[in-house]
Length: 286
Length: 154
Image 1 (cartoon, rainbow over the protein chains, first blue to last red):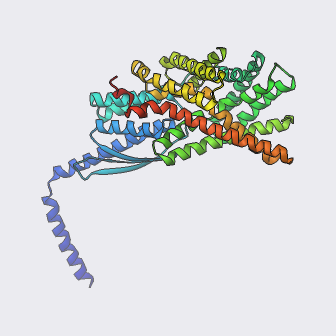
Image 2 (cartoon, rainbow over the protein chains, first blue to last red; image 1 turned 90 degrees about the vertical axis):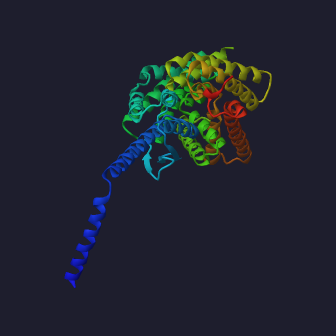
Image 3 (cartoon, rainbow over the protein chains, first blue to last red; image 1 turned 60 degrees about the vertical axis):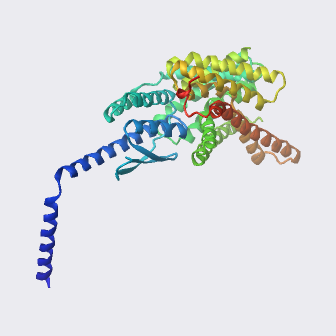
């Protein structure tokens, strides 16, 4: 029995070998190169869209930028963008080649400069017909850019906090209290970023510290309206971008992403309110 | 007037937090100042806060189209920071605070009904301010039916 099987295997092998020898070698290599390029394109497009999502772009902007880059490279794409992962399919219209890749999105850090730079790069890529390598190099350059120095950010946001206090009718001493509370709250928020705590825990801690400091203003009765300092000292944490982007997504019919962003915003607001509530309970006034 | 200046500064502060490009900084300040001026001016004449917010943001949205052409940055970058001083988040925070007071503190029925009123007022005000901000920013684009500012010929 075994000998018969062996002989028939040998015969099929010979048949296969015959076919293999007649296959033109160059076509196979071309197809392998095309699919390698397809995979590299898909990876690059995934990286760009992940970069845009992390920087705080709404879903429509990500779709538009990806479409522009893909059309500069003569591919078509379809993508599914969710909060934590992106699935993209890249295909060329006249062939049967297509490639689907998935990527996980790293934690969010809002950065409008990246959004602007990627948008400009996408327009230039279309106008000047960039290749894959040129696009990859430009994206590397964009990722290397630095943010503003930490002290500038701290001072600017603290001034914003003081500005909020003024909007709610505080006088200059209240604005000073709001300034100090915002400064130290944001400092704690930034310092815990490196230790990789859960983001909602960090927001809760920053809100707690900021509101305790502002409550000290009430205890020592600084200024005419010390309550406004308490109410505005935590406003620097409020997720304005997440909430605004959620409604923009809902308007564009990306209901999943809209609801996801809205829930993220709501969780952040919950953490802020919890911090404030515990601080107020500590000092026992309403 | 001074309130508008501080809203400009608040818009600028948040712009820096979001890391806007350096050339956009004066534009964001001016837009924040203008939006604050319009909104608080309208509220001074007793117009409802949601409507005042919508008008101010709509104005920002209309202005940002020619500005986007001049500065060569996408409109997102300098439309969101000036709208942050409109603070939809303040009402969200008030809502959640009222919810917590309602659950954990008050047992007195009349106080509870005051709190329920506060919850609903603040919650829905936040909701509608958010809608008005988004509608105000997106409406100029939607009305002209274009996908991108760059394709505008006017």
